[in-house]
Image (cartoon, rainbow, N blue to C red; front, side, top):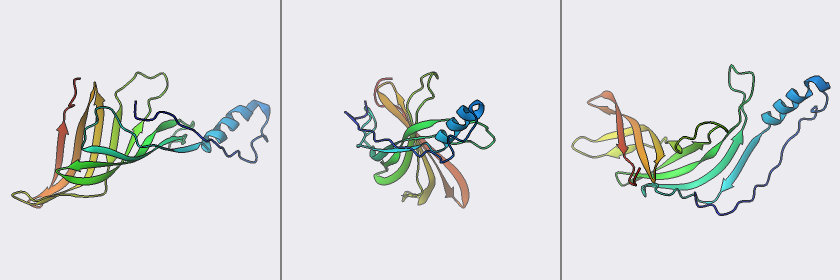
Amino acid sequence: AVGVKSAILPLNAIFPPNLFQYDLKSAAANIKDQLLANLHLNLNLPTLRFTGMPSAIALKNASFKVTAPKLQGQSTREIYAGITGTLEAKISNQPLDFNFYILAEKPGSEPKPITLRGDTKSSLNFASFRAFTLNGLNLIAEKSGNGWSVSLDAQSKLNNKDIDVSASVPPAGPS
């Protein structure tokens, strides 16, 4: 579906030295927590191609990542899996590199469209009737039927006033 025909997944793990020093009643929870605390899977992927993705967006590199952080204020860990990497988006014929991620849905949850989210530290300059620069660009591409809808949000200044700028492109394919 994304241009990967086969993959080899080398796995390894770090076991804490005191893993088996717990009494049997509390061992399972402690072992699970320590294993999840050390779960940091990062596998490089070949160049991905998403069917129907606009030609102005090209994925440059990607990794499959799995981790299980303990979120602030939570007593248990959650496993997160997804794809991260960099992509190049041509906006007004200007190429910009974005860091992106696609977060996998939780097992058993209602299926949702694939959503790619990205951001860049780069700026985008326009030399129109009044030159301006877009900063803090955020990109969202969401699979819709056979196409992708794309939206871009940024900040700029116009006449010395801060403004928010948004643009969106509907899916090219049938939805």
